[in-house]
Amino acid sequence: MEMTVVVLGHVDHGKSTLIGRLLYDTGQVQADRVNFACNRSAEQGRSLEYAFLLDGLAEEQEQGITIDFTQTRLRFENRDFVIADAPGHREFLKNMLSGASQAEAAIVVIDATEGVREQSRRHGYLLSLLGVTQIAVVVNKMDLVDWSKPVFQSIQQEYEEFLQGQGMEAMQYIPIAAYTGDNLIQTSENLAWYQGPTVREQFLAFQPARKAQEALRFLVQDVYRFGSQRLLAGRIESGCLTQGQDVVVWPTAEKTKIQRIDCWPRLETLSAHQRECVAVELADPLFAERGMMLSGAVQPPAISRCFRARVVWLGRKELAVGQRYKLKLGCQEVGAWFERFDRVIDIGNLQDASLAGVPAGFVGEGLLMTDQPIMFDEFSAIPATGRFVLVDGYQIAGGGIVLATAAGERQNF
Ligand code: GDP
Image (tube, rainbow, N blue to C red):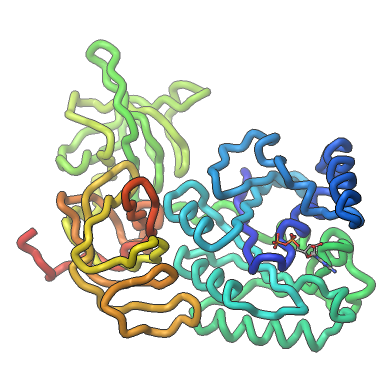
């Protein structure tokens, strides 16, 4: 099973060079692509820029790419990795929160000559927000600091303290020179003082399948009718489905059983698991439409018009109390606004700001209201149904997570 690893870091710290060189050293790029990158580098009077190997590669590999996010495939031994390279925290967030990409592990790249920068901290914070716990930090361009152990150690210490403050810990810190390939595939002689894994070994140390969550969440994306038969097509975001299982259809709360599961390309199957897209037939001809959800007989989703949320705001206009947006959670779309903010945090320095609204680059925590009841879960319990995006016009202006159901607050809704 493939695994998505996101590569993050301040611009120019060497993300593309790292990915390009890994592909190159493992022979995973075509000769004409290498020629293209050589020629382009030569035109600019440079030796081979490994980053150029990536230009257009994602399109060539025919990934389901989103505009702001390149995804490159990398294979080590018999394991497949999808490398998501986010040009900035805005794109990263948009894709993670909208579910376009769900990274299970992250590599944070820090330039040894520049050290920990604001962007390095922001990315660390976003990983904590999104619940990505498998993190490796690579300190790059070690060639430019004379392969210095003290430089590496001081960057490691600074980032370690920062992550600790967020309640996080990196699995590994690795000194590398992406450009020269030191510690990527081969152990580096220049960095003989370092005893840990290479980048390739680190990839293999990432654990693939995230612990499967038990509570069933099947989001209905479409309903197809064939005569009297009705098929609910959608994705299992959590748990698994089995033929004959008792399920509850939300928000109508009607109980039924799973009659049949179709799973392309196998067709009929007895069971299906988290992340699989399937079509199910229910034992009873209940009303169903896009945006509905199936759960098991126990552990239902929350259904409410309000919850406590944490939102990372990227919109041009500041996020203000009472301002209306479109909220998308799974296939559900409703009008939404913040009733109040309890905290506003600057992602740059992670300090609380005493502001009434939330400007771009800030995080707001408070009570979110929707104009119709929606189904959701707390992010800490079920991430897939605990995250949402806020859309302003046609633009994703912010993304957030459900911190808690707002029990006791505005129960009249
Ligand atoms: P990105 O913006 O993080 O993707 O950074 P790039 O991969 O485009 O790298 C930025 C610049 O740093 C390029 O000119 C690279 O050649 C250079 N670079 C990347 N890694 C290294 C390294 O290990 N050593 C040296 N000396 N330069 C590097």
